Amino acid sequence: MAFESLSEKLQNVFKNLRGKGRLTEADVKTALREVKMALLEADVNFKVVKQFTKDVEARAIGADVMNSLTPGQMVVKIVNEELIRMMGSEASSLVLLPGNQITVIMMAGLQGAGKTTTAAKLAGKLKETGRKPLLVACDVYRPAAIKQLQVNGEKQGVPVFTMGDQKSPVDIAKAAIEHAAKNGLNVVLIDTAGRLHIDEQMMDELIAIKEQVEVTQTVLVVDAMTGQDAVNVAKTFNDKVGLDGIIVTKLDGDTRGGAALSIRAVTEKPILYVGMGEKLSDLEPFHPDRMASRILGMGDVLSLIEKAQNTMDEEKAREMEQKIRKADFDFNDFLEQFAQIKKMGSLTDIMGMLPGMGNKLKDVDMPDDSAIRRIESIIYSMTPEERTRPEIINVSRKRRIAAGAGVDMSEVNRLIKQFEQSRKLMKQMSGMMSKKGRRGMGGMFGGKGGGFSLPF
Image (cartoon, rainbow, N blue to C red):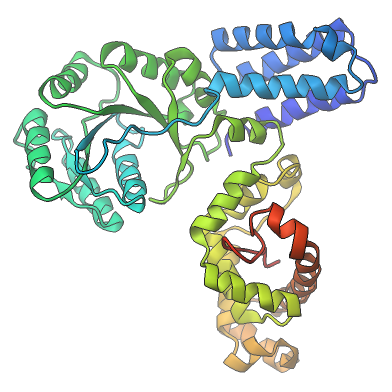
């Protein structure tokens, strides 16, 4: 995930602070110099970093901190609060008109930022909330963009309005709104044309659409991997066209992520969503407080619970809870757990949301998609009886299963061993979470609200 390097550096700085019984002004200034360097290396805007460290220092060198019994913890608390403030303090949402009024959202951005895919992702999110979205293909300069929008719209179950590439984007947008009104659709998402760089023609086109169509929200899509350029792009679009919000894509990649920290401070416009993967479901609301927690290694349990609740089948979760309590779940249940966890995203991302796990994961060999597919193929090579009664799997059966799955027998042995360990672990966890724990974690390990358990 983005911020991995930044997170590690900040945690090392704070570890040193926490190790001191008392802090001097020099200790704080030394720590903040390291924080400043870490933020700059993460590609956070220089002016933003300067103001951030100034604000933290002003608060951290106060008497309340210096005389505290845990001054190191107090400094971390201040940094956390200032990070949240820098990113916008509170989560922001799209403004959607009530009832059958048509909300018009104009999607803007440079070519390659993921604007067309993000438009489809956003349409899917809106559909989940009961809205009736319409995707509009206004990128008439890149025929592949129209086809891409149609394919993604079909996958999301959202209609796509297109008039080909011979009409002007303004005419297409106006016709699309008429089409939405006639067909009972209440959100129109206009996918405008992108360019490789900012030019007058693109800006004039966006301004023309806003002049001819009553746009409710103008949303800019920027690529986190372009770093400081993403901030400059956002500022230019805001100055020339006017923005209501921003979506940052590719925040799951090997990127420094400074754009997500800088954009709100530079443009004063909120980040609405972040793209966390290539799947059409990989679009998450942006919560400044949760992002700050993840950067500082405090985890993001709330987002993890929401992922579980949004992807888990409550009835299946209850059934699984009963099986876990009795420690009688089998390989069929094992497969079901894999299926549910895969809906939530990569295992590395899931584990990274748990407090204190960020730095520890870099030395852990987490299973990737190919490893999970091998495990699934091993289980699918078992007979129904073997899946239900793993204890009957002897050496000859293991040999047959390995051959059927196309893997070495050692992998079969390892899986069976992991399964037995998992069964014991789940029984222990169900005991711990049965009362107080399960209520406190929102049913994450079973019961009301969905549940999951890591099957290894």
